[in-house]
Figure 1 (cartoon, rainbow, N blue to C red):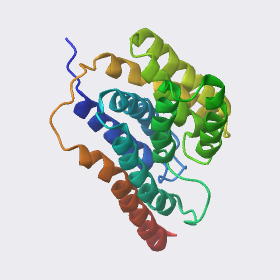
Figure 2: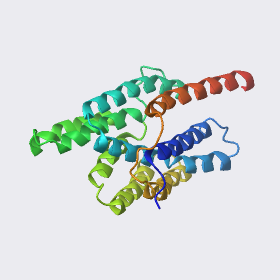
Figure 3: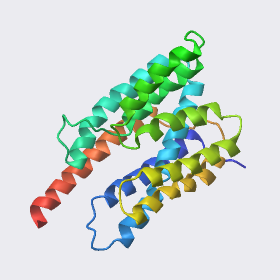
Figure 4: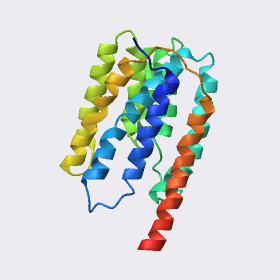
Length: 229
């Protein structure tokens, strides 16, 4: 029996995400602990992609849905830069930006108003705009892949597995952290238990949690830096 609704999956995602973000702040003199925290954190991105695809499918007003995601992508930019220690004007931002753009990508592919050849340039522009973000092009394209493959979870599972391989190849770091990306497949059993129900909870919690937790972790990191370095 499938017993994970959308709200429960999102709760799992934010717990994993928080653990993952805490791990990036830990000292690297003990690699084992942060690495295993990152392993658990790999389930976050696929659940986010999956939930955006579901959101696009069930929403009654995709423009409003896109607008809401865009607003929180802009808010999250400042929280993300604060957490990472980047200047706010830096052209690199959080995963919320390509996730918001993925809504446009889905609707662009789906529309009959624009002919097929006319969609090429907007798609290229969306890809270019998503490069400057965490998870980059994958966070733009994977919600669309999962959206158009809703008819087959097996295909969705294969797509998630391939995304891990692609991320491992594209990640510009040393081998253990390349291998880390392959653990996105840990999300597959969780998503396989999705019962297509919304669940009970406040949808705004997830939008607010992302920038708030980054801000809190950024503050904690600065306090520890001042006290111990």
